[in-house]
Image (tube, rainbow, N blue to C red; front, side, top):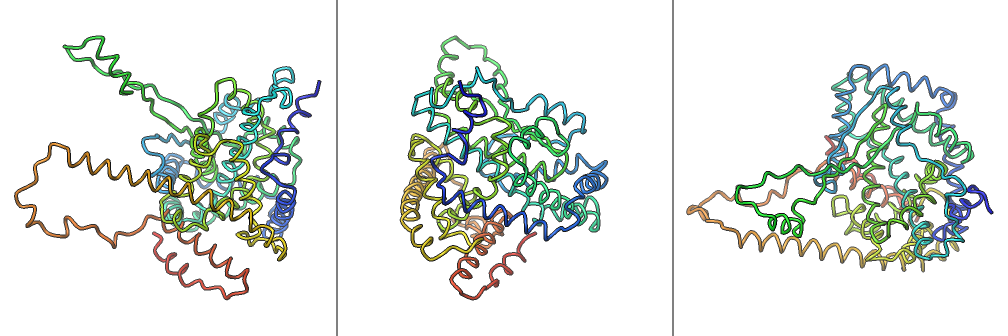
Length: 470
């Protein structure tokens, strides 16, 4: 019988059907270059990790509650449109409390006799779901790692300056970015098995996030209540809804951002499991949600998530929607829209299209040419998903209009004489920081693509948008 570690290699990211040898090679080249760039940037500071950690804790000491509120405000500004009624519980616990929380929520490694073997499973539904879950987890972790961009955003800078003054705010951001860079380099360099063991024992630089479901409060029954009323209520779903709450714990602002984004992505990713039975879900988790898996996700997540973002940014329709990438991703992982096996094919095409949209490394003309068929196939699928989302939005708006027209509403007698300023849409209403940042990211993508074609870099629009940030 194979050991669990041998079996795990068969469900490894590097052997995932969505990951081609060519793409894996490009990840290795980019990862090595990332480490070189980080080392050149920070030099001797690469050995000052704990000094930076302690400096951050010194600055934030006594202001933890204010930092929690700042983190919550920034996350809501970035993701409020997709969170809906989901509650956020973002906290900076004491280090000892964090250690206990990490112990309680730690990913566990199943014993060899408990772990279902991939080949023994012999169930294509489960096998495809396992491979899909590996990709989902990697992208979620990558988006969390890339959340450090929020540290340099205007809301974070303004909030930290208000709390600590300009000098300490700059020092905190500088140290948090240094910590993030050192950790990213370490995640790439340290062998995955060693990284997994470190994660099992060390909570000093860790955070945690969980999704909790609050039971609805009981509804007070009217005097004329009858048992049939409860039956009707359950049929309507009126009393069965549960409120979602994301519990985010981290020891500093960067950790809070990381864990919050990972939790939000995890919440979205639950839609990718909706078609599975409880036994299927258990098998999937045992194959993909261990500490070794998380070590793998940390190693390559930032690069793969960046590639997915760069690809989706090539669609103007997505960039025009707030949190458009998240909405499209939700459709991509919905097995009723794209079955798991087809999802893996789509992700392979997206990854293999990297020579067209990725400008981090120099691809040969032949690489770019060979990527075109994959790009065309992937674009065709995403275009269909965008059409589905647009249709759903249109139907939702139409339904709201119908509900409004059907409502018991009496139009004021002086409606026609009201000032136009009260009824017209304000076309000059300022964009949110999140919308502005999305547009800046899109402009940088256009600049990089232009540079790859040998064209001059034009930062005019980037400068204009940057000035709009508050």
